Length: 516
Image (cartoon, rainbow, N blue to C red; front, side, top):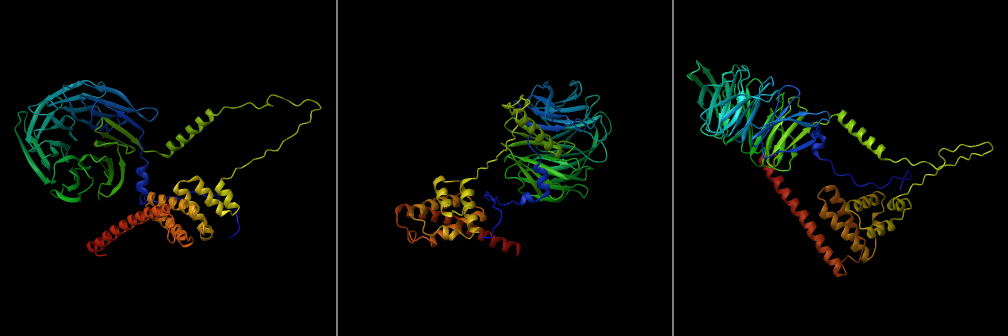
């Protein structure tokens, strides 16, 4: 062995995963749960105000709570709007953030002033529950509502007058968005599985109109969520487990399709302000991040239960996820400043927790004729037992120490790796005796059962082969305990072989399908 500085024994590093190598994954991994709040019932809808300070409207039960970012970065409840007679179904902000639209299960839509939280108008129509609402993008005096009866209704906000009613869908309407061009362009999607673009041209206030259906596409399954891209040229719909991207300019051509975006039904989706990233949430307990153009998955967040809705904050630095278990979580992105602040706060707490003990000589001063003796400070460093034995080249004692302590399999594999690198594995494991063989086989059996990474498995098998080759008591095993342990090892190895056979079958199938 080459001489040099001794390096302490370290635990074997875990193999790096693929997602740790991508910049996008590292970025979205920085979105951490900073706050979780519980409401009175499941979270139905979430919506951020488009203007600063980006207030958040949370719909749960028969009330809407408005939250704002506090000084510590967490969301603080500013007010609660509870003037509804039935369960609130949906909420939407006007583009300037001064008004809120909210629809409930009685068929009433309220126009609420955000500053005073006062109800300015009540839009009542002959409908079942109001399931989706939206302000017009180019005309702030108009808004639209969609109902469980599948009808699209156009309203005058100032007069609370119903301008137009359109039989838009044969089932419950779930999504309503303003289209491009004018206040008469609207995009709807519903449980009948259709996405439709409407051109509504009202002639007077008596309801006479000319409603034209410009685009009609079939998603193939009931639609629960959808988003229109800026400009109104593209639209993404979520129905069942699939995502589909539609080119509305070309008449509704399907641009992208991802059939198995989630394992269960997708319940909500949200585009960021640049329309480059798409967030989805599902009943499978996952929230996922996709590239909006290609629907390529970038990251996924594990939730504590089925998700119900999701929303990006307009500055793209935070997201919020609503769950069926009556909770919602606020997840801002951790910036370098936040990380530095967290480290500084932890260091400050550590310093405050330290109790300063006065020295015995504190406050004493040397007098005339006193001799001051400066003592040297001795630093004693206590080596770990394994490192101490490796320094002394006592390899047999290292094995004995392992058998006495029965350590974690990772530590044992680290010892075997160090012996292999020093070229001492074979000499150390030669004729160690039946009792030591029994202990080493138990350690290797735990290692094979615990780890499925090829790196760990190969190291364990290399040690096992060396132990078999260098100990006559294992050729064949002499005692019942050794025989039983060999059978357990045989089962573990057979399981690994079965997994490899399945992988070989999959490899052959991929070659056949992909012509590799």
